[in-house]
Length: 187
Image (cartoon, rainbow, N blue to C red):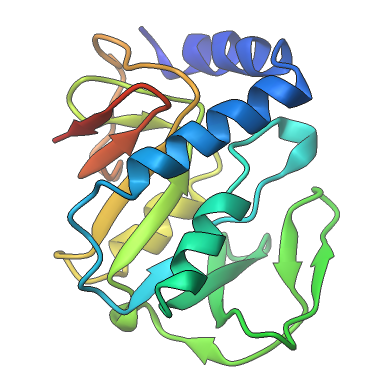
């Protein structure tokens, strides 16, 4: 299926989820994340959910990372360059929603891409080969292209894998894992 079709379908499916369903599915996803073989690393990048887009609530994963005393990184998007800057999440980090309702750090301790070992990635859909569909702006593809090749890329999804995304581009960066409420896919 084409990315444009998948975007429409999965935005509609997500929009149909209730707050309770989102919370239950997000908790189930975080319990699956606990089973991943990723806990020897130190620097974890995670997105903060855009509530208006009904994204996976990452608060549960944030609590796991914090409980395991990991370095947690969150991003600030630059819509002029299409890039992202990454900041260490601390007790004093001030988070504010930008014009697109993305929760972002106001400022803080910036961490370069080469330090990042694990990235949790928001997405709308993914396929059985580890290809993913986001909102189509390419922020994560540009970000991941500047990470080390061995950086683990983990998608988080309310829904199971599609058979195939047919319009994959050369610059699209696939996943190593995708975690759903029911299972973890490994690619």
